[in-house]
Image (cartoon, rainbow, N blue to C red; front, side, top):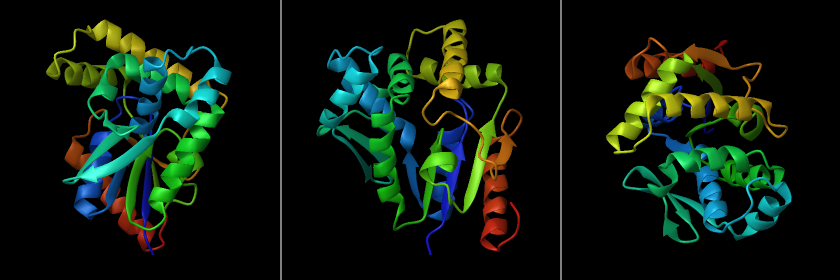
Length: 226
C-alpha cells in the first residue's frame, strides 16, 4: 500500500527543500502544491481579474488549466499548456497565490487534483493544508516551523540568487503578511494537524531535518507513534 507524507508549515520554513530531499531518498513522488496555487495566481493577474473579488476569482478558475508534470525528476508546472515553472516564483505571484488560495472554489479544484495524484503512488506533498485537508489520512504528518527572521533570510537569499531587487526588509514584511493571511483565512487556514509532528528547522541543516523525517516515517510504518 502506498505511503504518503504531508509536510505543512509557513513560508520559508523549508518545506519544499526538505520535501524534495525526502522524496528523493525514498524514491517517492514529490508534489509542490504551492506551485499549483501560484499558477492560478499568475492566471488571475495576467487576466486582469480583480484580486479583491472572490466571486470574480471563482468565476475565472475553470479557465486556469493547471497541469503538473515530472520531467527528468523535476516538477514542472504548466498553465494552459505553457511552462510557468520559473514565472510563478516572482514575489508578486507569492502574494497572489496567498490571495487566490483563500477562495473556496480555487481550493476545491486544487485539492481534488492533488488527491488524484496521490492515489496510486508513494508521495511526499508539501503545502499549508496537506495534513488537515488534502491528505487527512497521511501515513506521516509533519509541521515545519522556524524563526520568522531566519525564514525571511532564507527567502531573501533565494531571491538574491535569482537577481531579484527585493530588500531583506521587504521580504520580511511580505512573509509576516503572508503568515497572517494564511493563518486567518476562512477556507483551510494554515494550522498544525492534531496528529502532526512539529519539527523546528531554525537550527537544523537540511540533512538533519531529512533524517528526522525518515526516522519518523519508519516509526509510522512500523505502527509506532510518530
